[in-house]
Image (cartoon, rainbow, N blue to C red; front, top):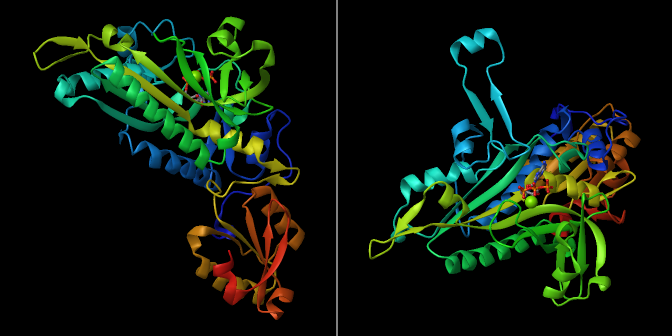
Amino acid sequence: MKFSQNFTKTSKTVSAETESINAQLLTRAGFIYQELAGAYAFLPLGWRVIQNIESIVREEMNKIASELHLTALSPKERWQATKRHDSVDVLMSTKAANDIALQKSTAEYILNPTHEDVITPIAKQYVNSYKDLPFATYQIQTKFRNEARAKSGLMRGREFIMKDLYSFHVSEENLKEFYEMAKERYVAIYEKLGLGEDTFVTLASGGDFTEEYSHEFQTLLESGEDVIYLDRNNNIAYNKEIATPEDAKKLGVNFDDLEKIKASEVGNIFPLGTKYSELLDYYFTDKDNKRHLVWMGSYGIGISRIMGVIAEKHHDKKGLIWPKNVSPFDYHIIALPDAENIQASEKIYQELGEENCLFDDRADVHPGEKFADADLIGIPTQIVISKKTLEQDSVEVVDRVSEKKELIKIKDLKINL
Ligand code: ATP
Ligand code: MG
């Protein structure tokens, strides 16, 4: 993409209300736009990051489930049927906004905060025999939650993007088998996102659900909202909300030896058991034609929260620093302003592939401003083209993290990157 065609601009400042580092940097770099507290538009650069995160998640989820797309709106009755209409404290609804619209319809809809209540009736319609079980399906979709505190930028939204997967089984054993497989796929996802080293499978209360524990994926982060109790050597962690000396004992660790450390929840998987099938009368028939409740699991990943977490973890005083796998582009081509450079750069841009490069082709912008923009945007590899480098048939390749600079011959560029 050419910089001159990117309609957003970088800015040196953000409004004083922007408290979190991720919202400050992502807003200044033109990745996101705040529509209201807790709701952000993803601008072209930001949307590419989201798409990269999504494609890593899809790659792993497609190994264990099929993708679908559920509705964001549902009828009130869906949530009444599971008795959650009056108990989920973040539930939001929508209805006609004015008298003219009300004449057409007075219906009130729920803006889904999660989809167990919605997917179960669909599963019930299609899958009623042991022959069709197990199955698993997932989506990547916008969720709505009326969060009280929405001051952490992308890390806590009232509207946010989640990957949610639901699995259906004939027995507890079969659910557990799938659950462990899903856990492994989750570990692979955080690894690919560059968060592997700092992300711990963490025991947490099941919340709404029947089993004793659910498993959270917690990424260590100073600005995270959670505190986990961590035994790094044995790779055991549990969430402060459930952390008692008795829990520690059960896990065979000494409570006082545990590290108490801040983290952000980037995923959560739940063995739901038969909670929803009981509420919604969801049975399957076995080979003897006997009826049994269906066993279920649900598995979430905070796609947009992850973008916020990465921004919080990977930046310096000049701006963002994207890990390669999620960076909006692989290369940031900086053509220093003079016509000859721009032309030579255009060739390099074509050669490296338009899809892979952000090409700063602006002819009327001072070099200092171009460098500052590139550092703020945070693409990991910068390619600087100037009169000086061209005299040596070369470009300067700059690593955004180490700031290491290397002069590379244009003819050797592709093999050297
Ligand atoms: P939290 O404890 O942070 O409020 P949660 O436990 O209510 O989150 P889940 O229902 O487990 O959230 O949702 C699955 C995943 O979606 C979470 O692990 C998190 O990564 C993400 N998520 C949840 N709420 C938000 C939010 N308000 N904004 C952004 N991401 C969120
Ligand atoms: Mg959770």
